[in-house]
Length: 187
Ligand code: QAP
Ligand code: CO
Image 1 (cartoon, protein in one colour):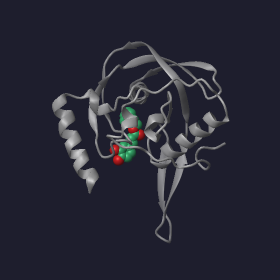
Image 2 (spheres, rainbow, N blue to C red):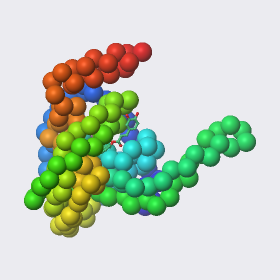
Image 3 (cartoon, helix red, strand yellow):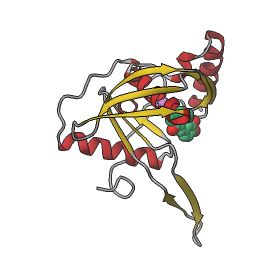
Image 4 (tube, rainbow, N blue to C red):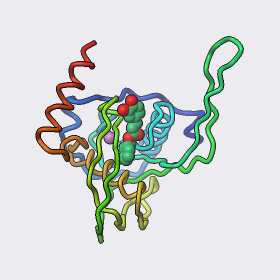
């Protein structure tokens, strides 16, 4: 199945939805339902557009996220004024039951989140890490990551532990950004 053309657009929960604060449960059943959820998550992420999306963001408390940090999306305005999007260089990733090892170094990167739209801030993370995870079939896999890939893996993994990236900022920054975000959200 192709996540670009096929799949449902899932509702993305935004801060401060309670599901975003919960610790997600490990996946134990690798079945068709799991495959469908992952495809729908990828579809939703590409549509948004975003580079990462975790299951709690779509209301599912399971240790799953999808990612693609490097694709291109071109907007084409058609004669009738409607926009159409052309996607290229897709590298979809499905990560289940992730565990990190060998976290080292430090990187400061400006992050955003589909659950806190419009808010971007620099967050400090590990520069390099090794990831152990399961793929959608339940097969064990591992991956060495650095730079944006490492940052995005840590951002998405945080969602599985009920942490949104603003929680990683100083209390002062966090409170300021939250007030601003909740104010614009109401409008
Ligand atoms: C996480 O975030 C990430 O505010 C993925 O209005 C981001 O895909 C990890 C998005 C950056 C590392 C670096 C955010 C879309 C997408 C917004 C996203 C928005 C529309 C965020
Ligand atoms: Co996020």
